[in-house]
Length: 169
Image 1 (cartoon, rainbow, N blue to C red):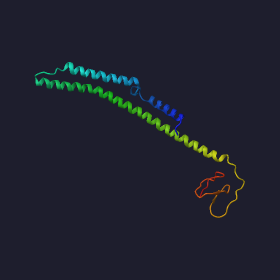
Image 2 (spheres, rainbow, N blue to C red):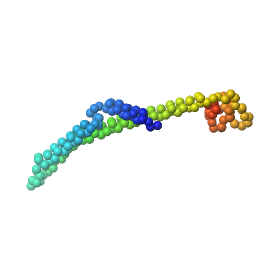
Image 3 (cartoon, helix red, strand yellow):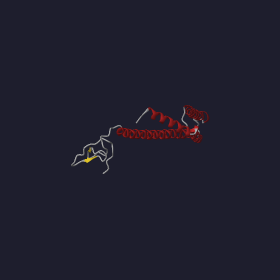
Image 4 (cartoon, helix red, strand yellow):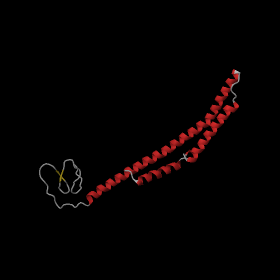
């Protein structure tokens, strides 16, 4: 049962769940821009270190090996904050998804409860306004009859179609 009220409940519950997440782990436009800027600065610094501080083309092979080791050291040092930003982003995505899943489950349960409540109230109203017959003649022979009004009932019916009484075997 999808309704506008259910969508509003989903949105409201989702926002409440988001408020439970610490501000540092909320995915917002500002936090994504900040993470992108951090990654860009790290990339720029890595490129600067590679091209400025590591001279290539030296004739000495030992010098080239040292430059290669320095290059890997710079890459590893640059990878640490990059990994920190990536882990932060993954945590943010997980917490955001979890908040949405919880809100969706709650809204789904709420819709099911509401549907059951409506069905139950409809069942009660269905037999409330039916006029009760004074007396329905009871047919003799095979077949079931209503214990309240005596109306004939089909073998698979559990409620009387005339008065709404339940038939118990």
